[in-house]
Image (tube, rainbow, N blue to C red):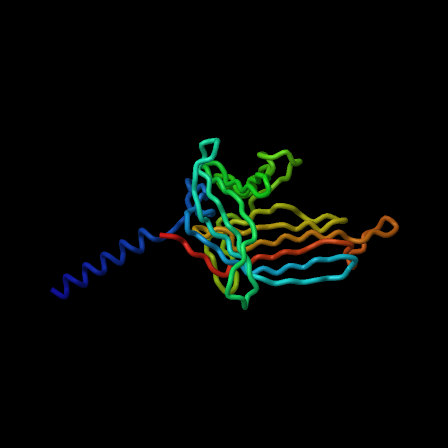
Length: 228
């Protein structure tokens, strides 16, 4: 009896290991880099720096992003409402911050905030693939592309085995425009760096030791909850 029980448990263990293992293949399109379900939420540790005439002001807080509603929009698309709240790390109460809506299809993920619809991801996820993030709004073209596809990423001593980096801008000689987001498989965005610094100009040269104006905003995932 005990021998049969041991065999049954061993088979169950093997089955569980096989069904839970995630291994991206050639048919892997990457939709699970952005899991969408009512009740899912993410909490980020946020650090911000604002710069004016080389004077730096810093701020730290937590940001919570929760999917609280799903409905069908006028275009017959399944649309999710996302609610943002924020608080200082030691506070107990979250304060409402803003709202946006999210659409996820077989081809892309779009987020609309302040009536601006931005394409955050496109499918399938492939290294070097480019797209116009402003393809659904009237702003000028803004090119995003994938880098470090299906690669590990370490954040807060946690290793996420399968991630993709979205490069949204790259630095130049006059303006440091460094914007990237990292998404983990079955988790969503785990890291964001949004840095825009305008350097001082003198005699047609750039002084990178002096920032005329700009800001830096870094988000690091602290908690992710996936609704059952």
